[in-house]
Image (tube, rainbow, N blue to C red; front, side, top):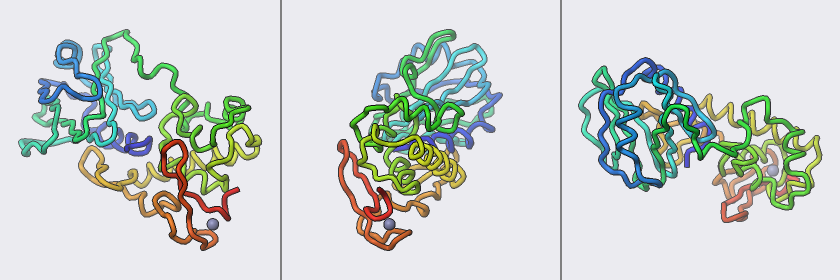
Length: 272
Ligand SMILES: [Zn+2]
């Protein structure tokens, strides 16, 4: 599932190609995504308008249009957004094509159809973005914030980091990795961490996300940026999906447990 670095990688790869372009026509081949695509609103608010910016909030990508509307895209489990210069053959599971004024197309492909593509009218709020926590790469993501927000919480520190109401964009891969690098055990109750430990956690989350963005994201199965290129952070994964592999720091085997239904990887020696 794409997390913040993957969505940011897609944003950076598409931004120079899309900004200034007009969306000429929109072809919807399959409406049944996580929520049905509103074709009438796509035609009314997006088609015929120019893209002024590509932004991101958590794992959501936002196309800002010159009429004040926005196109909100979430890639779900298996969504892919790709830029195609010409008449390339359509891949299976291509559900939408947004044709630009230079003849190129942006295609949304999603075999599992858990993603969403939602036009938002000018001056209308994006309901799904309400109540989201701060961006981890913003000044609001601090040790004091986490310490106060999770004061008394009995749930695990890893589960808390993956809660988008606490902080957006940190999914299973980067929560596991960040906790390894700061030496905090993932199953520790969030409410039991000191401010000093939260400082280590925040610094580690920021470092891991920045490094993953620099490497173009993590490609385990099918992640590609907007130009179809894979990421390279998978070679840097220290614990995620490394069960029984030797820990990079102490050489003891990495353990796997399940927390809130999600595979959790850690070194029982290096993480306390
Ligand atoms: Zn270790």
